[in-house]
Length: 256
Image 1 (spheres, rainbow, N blue to C red):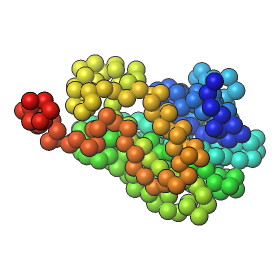
Image 2: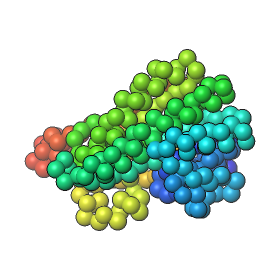
Image 3: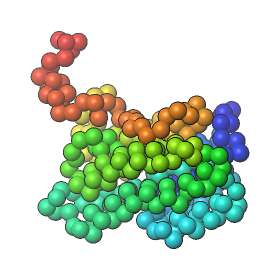
Image 4: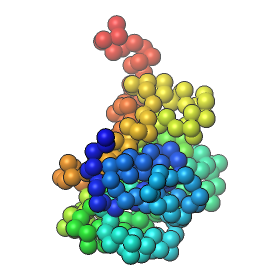
């Protein structure tokens, strides 16, 4: 049987309709948490006992409604996972302003609004844990300008929030997945294979692996971890371009 690390705890997960979010919801619920699975639409399948909630993460009013609902029904909040994300447009020249703004609204402003709305309830609950979901691209440049900007920004607001909320015993960390094996990623075909080839381990991370990491960071075992950048990317953020040069030219000693 799964552990019961979150028995009696209340958890909010955004972007919960699929991919990483849906796996995190199932794992928290399996370990005893009361989970509010939030997405832009609430008509998605969720595990038994999980509350499906329509949430526009870019809307102050939507966050206020969710916080009031959780406060009234549960009286506490222990974990917030800001997982919702989009990636619109590509480079600087071709990306439309509307797509740039929409990506920042969801990926960056959404996390800001979520923390602002939910942290006081965590404080009143005796403390808690916030996990922001960043990306390995937030350590380097990437061909998608809006996505890159939003994920770099997420690193900064995570650290500021960690400092601000420390007296309330609310921890704030950001994880940075690389290539994740989800239907959205594998649908890209050639791009998926090209990115996987550039990952030092040549292996895509599975959503269940990320969920295990999220639950560990949200648990009492990580009471002293806050303000951290935590890659889970097969070595992508450590590698940089020179790793690819060394690999192509067979310069690693062990490969000779």
